[in-house]
View: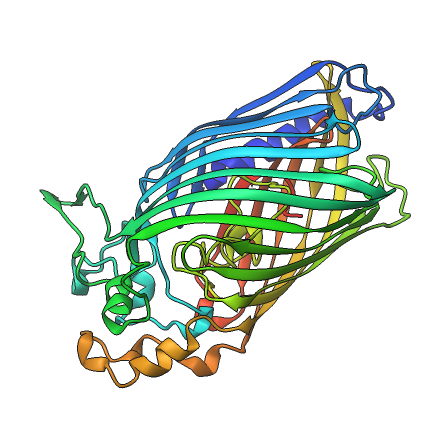
Amino acid sequence: MKKILISVMLFAACVFAVSAQEKEKEVKKGWSFGVLPTATFSVDNGFQAGAFGDVYNYGDGNTYPDPLHKFSWEVSYFTKSQRMRFYLAYDSKYLIPNMRVNVSATYVRDPLYSFWGFNGGASLAGLANPYDLWTNKDVNSNYFGINYYGMSRNMLRILANVQGRIVPHLNWAAGINFWNWQVGDMKDTGFKVKGDNDKHYYDKTSTLYRDYVALGIISADEAAGGNALELNAGLVFDTRDIEAAPNRGIWAEAYLNGNVLAHQYLKACVYFRHYVDIPIHIKAGDPVFAYRLAWQQTIAGQTPLYMIQNVPLLVQRNMISEGFGSSNTIRGLRENRILTEGFAWLNTELRVKIVNFKLFNQFFYIAVNPFFDAGIITKAARAQAFERAKTANAATFLPLSSIYDASKVGDIVYSAGAGLKIAMNQNFIISAEFAKCFYKPLDAGLWIGIGINYQF
């Protein structure tokens, strides 16, 4: 699948290069539709089948390349994790004068969700040859039928955020997000092994999730899920020339985000993104150096199991924004590999447009983006619970020391890679990125992420 996708993208670059003589001087008007099959692959979830897309309304073109209204949607299924996703979102800066409105509804079903433990590299592998068990459908001959890092979750999220202008480029922001979670043991429908016609099932009693519950690291009143109602409020500073893929400008946010229902907590979130135009006048457009400095930390209370993977954002660029690791934060790591109460990270990348062209009355460009990411835990999750669990090892079939090492909490995680982008009308951007993590405890080989949009 990876080879096919790369070949298609490279072929498209060669075929359409002949149309690259014309720069984008016109504007887009009216409605524009971008619809694609979700024929992707990831080591976490397997092949993805379904469809996703964006619908834009540019009106008379006065706001181009920003649309008057944008609708995003996705319906998909993942073969390995059996994940199902349904998503519908609306975003506009023009629905209400001088205000931005962003609303969405999301439902995710994860019968074989991967739970790697808390605090990144501190959460160790509890079995021999652990990397044989790092995908949901791999079965190691020595531990037949075990997916130690498996559990299940169902998530419903309804989100509404608004921004209003204070002065040019500076907005106030506020929002409300409702969540319903159902979590627990894996809901395995069975699988077959090559050369064996019988169905096999994972051992639900031999999981890290069960060990954490037995040790009291996951409490009984959060182990099955619950509801959350998050309120957020803060400031947004934005001087970007184009939202989807800026050539220049700053985009910064600082806000508080807290849950007012059971398991109350309050988080501080600070994100600073800078886009620097490099005056090397390539015909397709100047290169752009982009970087993001980010910090998120719980400053009061404790985040429950079912919310700790959430990365709060005022404007959702992807359907799901969660987990330190993977496409949202540190590329090259497994999905949700670092679950913690505080994390700071850096993303840097060079965005270079190779060619632009017009096809079927739509404007396209192809770009590459080599990148470097790094991050560090600033506040460990459940530190006191792990300390208490040191004296309760008899409650689990593995001693705590074999699944957790607190000394690794402060380690720096870093990765590097490169991506390929195909953009339509400067807004609908198909992305393929490849990365490698160079922090050994979290290295899981070649990582691939295929989706939409630049990461930031």
